[in-house]
Length: 109
Image (tube, rainbow, N blue to C red; front, side, top):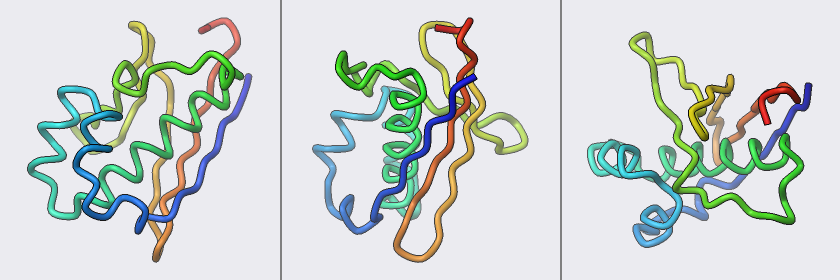
């Protein structure tokens, strides 16, 4: 089992619509457009996707962020989806930071 973690400053994502378009999947972009706090939305997803890449150990062969999806279930709990597999993810925001943790079992990649 591998664990990935990433932390980012939310401020980095202020007024960054083009960045959001590069890193969010089509489904996430629809949610982004409706989000009350766009900076928190995109910063949390960016941190989660970075954490996933770190957990997989694939930083040298970058996975396009748009292929990684963060989907909220019916009860609001997020999960990370990549290549028809689902991974547990936790995303939190506190003050000026967003942090995410992803767990990847080795047999899943």
